[in-house]
Image (cartoon, rainbow, N blue to C red; front, side):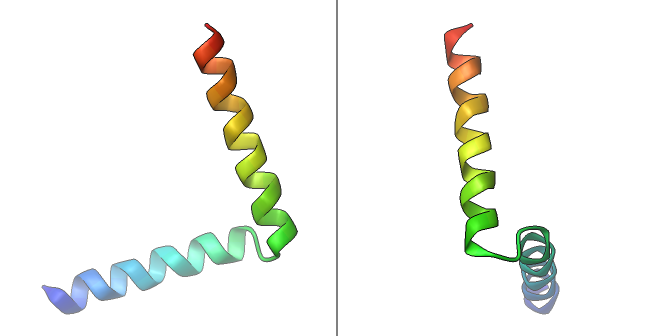
Length: 43
């Protein structure tokens, strides 16, 4: 079971890293997420 959890974690990390492959891309993703949270909080 531990090997499965490790493999799953590595797979998830690869997916996330390939989705935003630069530091600038990560910043943009975090900014958008923050904006969505602010919009939800205003409702």
